[in-house]
Length: 116
Length: 331
Image 1: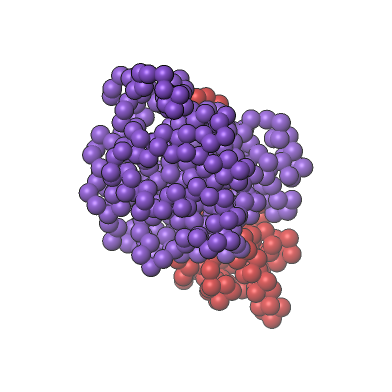
Image 2: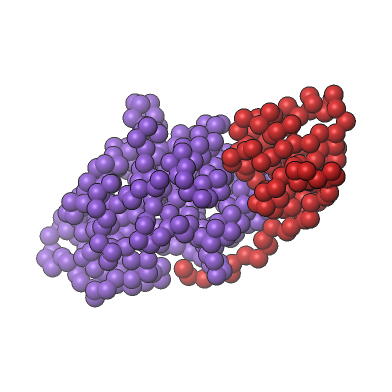
């Protein structure tokens, strides 16, 4: 299924929660689900983080694979996997098997105080 | 296609010397008021105190005043707030960037909400007067925000909205996606329009979730000569330090500097919410870095700036409640 079948708008945590709730219905009927992400014109980190965090809290994340060829989307998924300490399964279109996305730490270095 | 929008709101661009990015002015300081006319004292006060604000990039005073996000806190700090009706002298204003308009608008809204109203010496420069008039600046900002909403004067998106417009944002659950969608339509041929829309969504959603204020403002401007676009979001809500300290995990920021709280908020999963954490500002920082742009944020009397070569933070001369953000992206 595409992410747009779960929610028409893929921005904000509120929409991430909507997508999670819609996904629960499908997960009751199917064992594993692939979610195609690349049809979304804007796909925010907050949206993805809310969806993945909710799935992880419900112990359902391993039953979902995200399908994307978009490097920025893969980077976001890698960031979320790193910060939430979870395995997020991703595959490119055409690939038979999903693999855990490489974890990518979000920036930790912060500025030191000084005058602008 | 993006069209050039200048200070004259669709007319000719302002002279290049008004678009200085350095913050410095070419001319030496000059005291414009020579007499002791009491009516001019606050004007002199602004000038003198502004002259002291060397530490934020205003290297000297000039009769040509160029207000940008970098120096607008110093300008606000120079306004004498002790009179019943403080005087704000904009007569020498020759250029004001939309992000400075947003900051200044939040300044006015904040003090209006406290019952303080201002006398304004209007800009003598016709282009600036027209720009502020076209943006309905006084109707938009020089009233109490709650009254603006009640009286239906709030100006939201219209079919004619352009990249040069200032947009009011009223807090609601879907405001972030509505503003992002409008930005997407306006910039529909920009190669990074999706990323820019996501950044806008994160910033506006932060306002909607955390600020507790009723209104924010959004501005977007494309500068063809500088080859950059500037996005700005500002509110006069509770600010990052207060918002973050509502979460006991980050209660320690309440007693610290505003810029320290802002730095904390840029870290992953840090949020004033008790559950879930936040990624909004972290993602804004990363997305802007990927676009080789710059994020500048002020909250209270603190600022944080992430630019392609590093980051800086520290105090600014004026303590304005809320959060103001400027994003500069090369085009």
